[in-house]
Image (cartoon, rainbow, N blue to C red):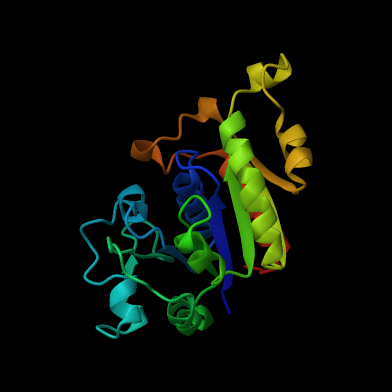
Length: 234
C-alpha cells in the first residue's frame, strides 16, 4: 500500500516541484513504484519537469469525473519504468472536492509504494485539497525571509492535519553565506519552524528544470530518509 506524501510550500518559486520530482526519481531508481500526482490546478508543471507533457491522454480530473479509470490516467516515465505521473488540469473557478481526489489516489495505492502529491503553494483551497489526501508531508522552503515567513504559516496548518510525519526540506542553500552568518543555517530554520530537518539542497547544485535528473547527493539522502522512515524494503 502506497504511502501518500504531500509536498508543499508557503511561497511559490522555492523549488517545491523540483524537489518532488527529484525525490520521485531517486525512489524509482531504488526500485520503488512511485506516482507523482500534480494537484496544482492552474499552475501545474510536474509533467514539464518530468518531460512527459506530451504523453498524457487523460489527467486527474478525467479520473475524478469518470471519463477514464484512474490507472488509465497514469503516464509511465520513458526512462524510469517504475515511475508514473498523474497530470493535473488547468481548471479555473471550479470546485473539485478533496474526497473525490482521495478516492482516485486510494484506488491506485495498493499497486504502488509511494504517491507524492505536488501541492499548490500557499494556504488556499488547492493546498487543503492536497493536504487532505496525504498521510505525511514535506514542507519546502528557502533561507529567504519571505519564504520562511510563509513556511511558518503553512507549518502551523500542516500540524492541524495530524499527519504521521511532517519534515522540512531547505532548498537553494548557499553554504558560504550560512557559514558567514549572512543567512540562517538549515538547522536554525528547522528550529524556527519547529520541524525536523530531513534534507538540505545546496544552490550550487544548479538543479534547474533542464537537468532535473542530475545525480545529487542531497536528493539521494532525502530518498534514503523517506525509505528509512517508511520501512519499505527492496
